Length: 215
Image (cartoon, rainbow, N blue to C red; front, side, top):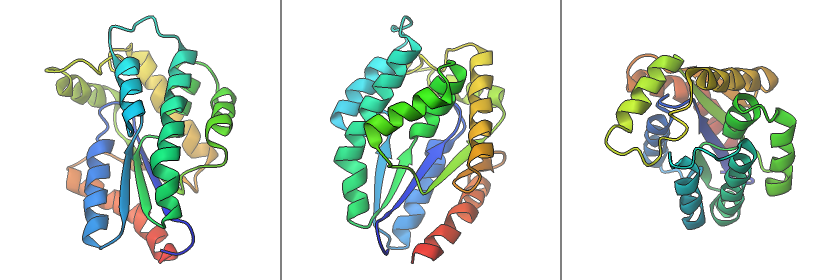
């Protein structure tokens, strides 16, 4: 790698399969001998994991949209300081499960706080730190929720957002499409239909040109 490392993020509505696709990409990059650091938002650090527990606990139904936003950026600022920026400075590829685009879609669009409020918080917490490329796994909202509910059937400790009304999740999906329209060079919608291997090849088709440019 030349210059600073490469920052890649994965996005998608609940049950989209983004975490699975991120793991498959990380495995592929490691097989190629590339240095990779993983992150999860919220939750990539010890502080972030405590924030994740608070934010996603279904018992916290009273949580306001602004509280959600501030908790997300508290976790993200810690991950940036502890994980992301140091790894980029070492020239590594950082792959993160969610980043600020999630907050744009969930709190900015679905909760109605607005994109500019989210972007102001980003500038305050993270300055100019942005992904080089974002892959958003795009699937049918109802199909994704069915997956998410199945995933949480045995452990509902992180099901608070999954339990939101269907129209909330449709607004999240609309928020991601809006980001794609605003930033088509960075933010790529990838069809999530088909087997995980088929989706992985679509993801690789978006990422491999960037790796070639950086080599």
